[in-house]
Amino acid sequence: MGEAVAAMRWRPGSVVYAMSHTLVRGLAALRRRRAIPGTVVAVVHPHPTLRDGFDKSVLGLDVAITISARVHDELVAAGRSPNSTMLLPWGPDVGFAHYTSTGDNGLVLSTGKTHRDLATLAAGAEEAGVRVRHLGVVPPGTDTRSIEVVPAWPNLRWLEDLQSCAVVAIPLLSAAGTVGLTELNAALAAGKPVVMTKNPYIDVDVEAIGCGRTVPAGDVDGWCGALRDLLLADGQQRIEMGSRGRAFAEEQWNADAFGEGVAAILAAA
Image (cartoon, rainbow, N blue to C red; front, side):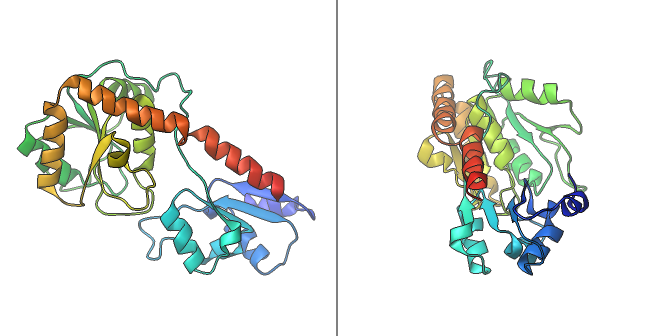
């Protein structure tokens, strides 16, 4: 339902929920001015291309849901009440049948297009002497001679590569909102170890969990060392790392936990 339709159907006591605050900017603005009665609830996702991460419409939300502790703190600093700014875990659907490991082919898998640092990944992989396949878009001018690039792919191909890869790589240009979380969630659910750029906006510490390694942004040597360590390690070690990540997702970081949190918020609205 679009904002215009929601506004036409609005009645006192109405509750609107959106998976992104960008879908209800107008309604949030009206609520901020108390021009309409009711409740607007939305998940706030900062975007790496916005100078301040998010726009001021978030201040009009009756309840802002965040999936990052750092975003939560930034929203409160921007003027939102901590009592109506809720932090929820946003993890994978661990019940999805295709989130499984079918083996370990020794390949490093990278996916995605937003804010990706493929140049650093490619240089680190070349230095480490490991095979990397990237599924997605490559920024113009990026030297990717040392990695296999598949510009477009069907979902089935992506799932097959995820199931059979040795390690999932998530190279980011810098800390930029929760970019990379989708790929991390998929790796956790499939039981695959991870090497990723450090991102304080993501509330999953792969090193503390024991399911991966983190590397500072732009650190070619760091990528080289992390990839080499994981690929030269005994295959059983990678299996154990992936299993720890899967267990973390099953126990506390999954779609069910997020859904239950949203349901509780809407029930109280």
